[in-house]
Image 1: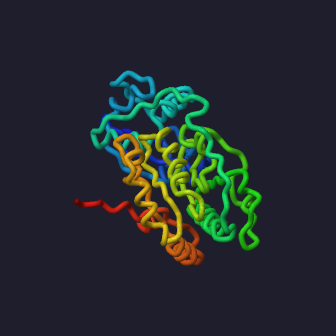
Image 2 (image 1 turned 135 degrees about the horizontal axis):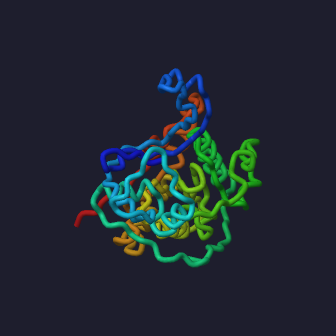
Image 3 (image 1 turned 135 degrees about the vertical axis):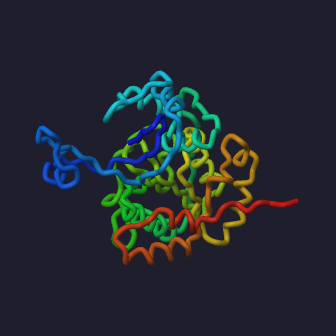
Length: 297
């Protein structure tokens, strides 16, 4: 949902629910001169203030630069799909335009952008599964849809069956391309919006986890949702070393700026504290995640 006023996009959010309720509408807005009211309502969550001239956004949806929408207007599905294929996440695009930066336009995506990472995972299941379960639980508490790889859905931790708490079907969009469907945990809101993505690195190669997140970043470079490597505290230095590689830290991906390190103990602490609340603010994880420290020479 984009809200426009005086030639600028002022507000963006996501529609969480819709309702038709004449009495509630009368309570909020009374009636017009004919006795009618505005009974078709929707509720917006994850709202963000923006300040983007509409002529910068219009061409991306196939409109003339100075097109002015009237009232409530739906953008046709083909235009939305084209936008997603060429630009990616709408909020990330708005923030990029707001900063006055050039958008990165995506090339036409081939079926296989990168080879699927097939690796033998030798790990102690309990700790990896514990972290995966905690992220599933926090995602649900944050009112997100949660995706884990199909191979992980039969797993359980302390009697909690993963399949009972996660999406069963993989809905491929630009933000969730099939090439990275094996990311350990993805928090989503609706079909087009990712909230966060997490790779848990217990005993596998840290490089392979970062590579999965780099695929996601490469296919949605205008997006601004946080990405996390979750690992034990003794692997922190190694994670930061990998993220400083020119392959990952170069001007195209800048993974050293967008991926944060989240230690096992910190995740345990956050999850335990959240058990006494009814919802969860995703900014808590963002604040707890550690950015790659700058290296001074």
